[in-house]
Length: 465
Ligand SMILES: CC(=O)N[C@H]1[C@@H](OP(=O)(O)O)O[C@H](CO)[C@@H](O)[C@@H]1O
Image 1 (cartoon, rainbow, N blue to C red):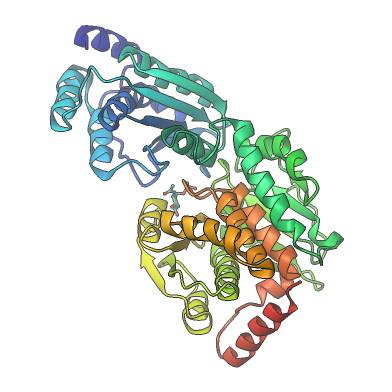
Image 2 (tube, rainbow, N blue to C red):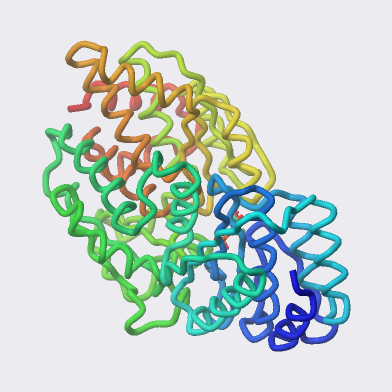
């Protein structure tokens, strides 16, 4: 490692004196014009992390739901997870080091983490559609190449797609192919297989309006839609051709203002949903016949999914342990419904996907959702193997159910919460159960009516096609 070369190149990505940033739950976020040095340095850090773990590391350039003028960066660890906490600290130290201290901080990290500089390094990079993202991703690449790391720049990707690529590359393709087609094919195949079993899916279940927050989700959903068009037709709104990213639209806007995004026409009882700017969260909503707006947030998505999974496990007589993870922002009725009606244990963690993800890994099937729409379902290796085996061994109807579970495993992005995965799973469940959005919304509202809700749940189970 030639420290003088690093110092020389670092000066080309000079840190504004006195600027202090913190690597938060979703990486660094601030105004884009303050981030050039951070990007260069995260390129350096990604190489060190890659050498230390002997694995591919991801770098995503995005500020998610934040305004278009902002940007941000986060590192993705080998199995698609968020960066390990001790490395978050290194990221903060490195980003905040003044130019003259850079060498010392870098050497400190190398020594503390016993990084073998002779080891090869590979970094994959993705970015969202912000005007600043392309240039900033080049600064990441500068950092990677100065430390002689190899890289693949995927260009425009949703955040969950980058997590997926990292996971695929580090599991020798077992999880999926590390290409955008690989992602589309894996998810769409599972979705089409799963929805084939929905004998009652009429037109009502075929169309969905999707607000893409004027972000990357629009591009990727359009690329993907012909892969699953047999099962679902998506109407994309806020695709970035007219409006600004996350401005008056997107999941965060809809959730916090409890109203539809600009630019979306909503007829009564139509199923609609919104992604955020990097497509890692989703909320659903509809207008009732009286014109009232109803939000269906992450709590309701978690409830729908866990009820369905529990039901499938009961049908095949499997007793895998299921846990739901929420944060303190979860609606108390959802927690009570899950615990008292569904009999599913619920756990609460701090806000931030990494906290929920970590807790969810303790279960055979760990379902985690924040009320704001970040979430996914994690299946342990044991659960996955068991389900795959049952899908071969069981007889007729039970085998069908095990195959449905197998498809659900493939549909979820188990590396990270993913609006596209969550949307496809939700759409499949609604079609399979023959549930309208209003019926889904009614799964729980408040709990004085507990008996009624139990009845409703049983009724719906029986109604499954
Ligand atoms: C990856 C991550 O941790 N994302 C955070 C972050 O969301 P973004 O959509 O990534 O901006 O901020 C949210 C709170 O504002 C928090 O709920 C969420 O967990």
